[in-house]
Image (cartoon, rainbow, N blue to C red; front, side, top):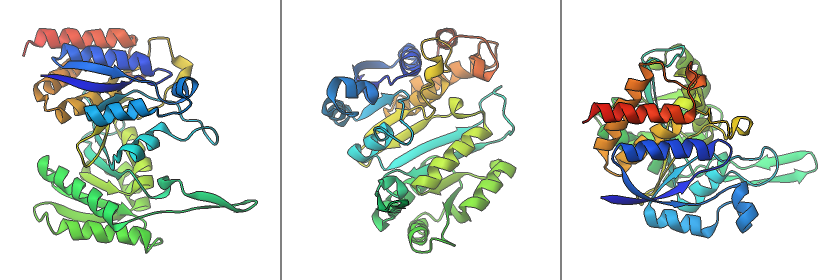
Length: 337
């Protein structure tokens, strides 16, 4: 079948890696009509807003979007497009699988874990104000509804993927009410999944154990802020943000699939960026669309290419963005399955 998919090429290296990924996905057998929209600074220039309503309407209609990296100003300017999309579309679950790719150099082996991050509240609610000059207050929002929803998502994912354990990560020893509510909800949901083990880690201890024994973790369940930090930490275990995918998922089946690395404006237009993170996010998108054969085809192509010498600079090679994508397409064609 032909899918209609919303496409956000992004800025910086976004258009380059997005074009490469679209090429590979279509070569893998995806039949798609792409509805392309600008977001972020490019959209402000044209529409006066970072998230034009036609873009949001498209995602609500297609229920699926592929998003390249978009620059977020630091300390000033407009708020994160990522956060805006999550709020506008109620994309409450951020799914970040992390595993060792073949022949991608990292400090660890045997890493195969999943980050499940609550995506809509916590300090990311953005409720902050100046109390008096020199004093700023930010509100940490944790609700029973959102915590229960994300806990159920984590356990259902573990059950579906035949994973053995869910670990809730928190700081309830200090934030006894807010993080206490989060783990109270996780404990309650855990009772409905007796086949999945459940345990808890204080966030600082979890970070220490992740860099000592990452192979011992399976599914990690976290509130928004800890999830943001820990997911990047885990990406560092397997080679960095350039080799890990991400999905933002909503209760009504909407999914936005993105690379979580930055827009790297310093190398934009040079055709040297690694498209792998967005491509792996595209694989998550294919599975979301029930295009498992195409997803498997892409993964076999990636594995074949990584076994050879065609690599972008960040993973030990000299290939350009387009050369890397071309190599994956050739590998899929040779595979023939």
